[in-house]
Length: 131
Image 1: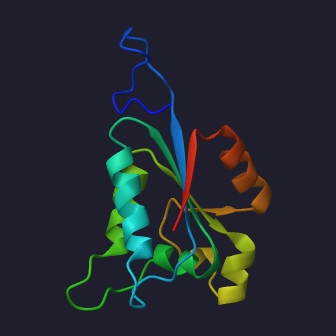
Image 2: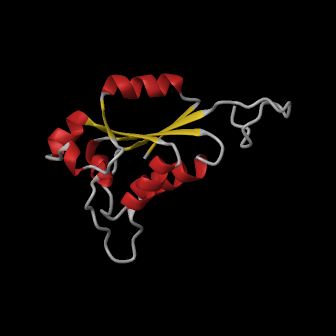
């Protein structure tokens, strides 16, 4: 149960809560799902642990040199901030391969992930949200 304050029933006991956010949507293609997922991740880092798993076309959000269109937020900068603040970010290895993207093309700190790792995050998380 999310308290929003990182405590359990007001007893002052720290609660380790985790949210896993799965981003499937390609960034900058007319919908803001990737951006909204990253915004939620950033807002959640205030008081809970955050995992972000990029899959399908969503792996594109983690590319180093992805430039946003005019008047759009820079998703790469958001991912860098997430990593600096302690979020874990993984990109599906099979999805990277399907999209022709190598790990060398990804933002430093993003790790290559597997479906087994995502399944582990899902089991360990209090909440899972998909964009």
